[in-house]
Length: 155
Image (cartoon, rainbow, N blue to C red; front, side, top):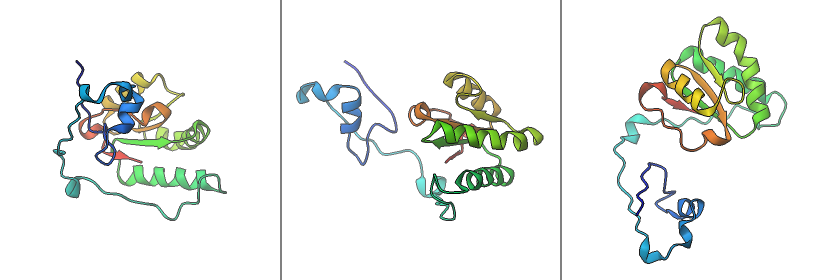
């Protein structure tokens, strides 16, 4: 027997993506049981979705500059534990290099996947700092658990 629990196993109340990813779609259906529980979180009070419509599309002229400026301003105005997810290592590295001087000057923690250590090391340092900015891609899109104030914003 195996029991899997997570807030992110189902997508729109459907477990098929997870079952396919871990190979359980091959198991006989009578041997599988799934259950969706209500969330303990009050999303109306604890979540805010912002869509910065003023940014150019990725790949367009000045997008990286705009993203850098947005992250820098966000962190000056609202210095909280922030995970920023990228789909491109190249863009992550470029944004990291452009943010690094400002963060160093303000003595704020900036951590970048591929630049500052292993995934586990980055998560540990991010958790311990409590107000850092962590830039990640690939393996950071799933399975990151940083409870409390150390992670309050995901971009």
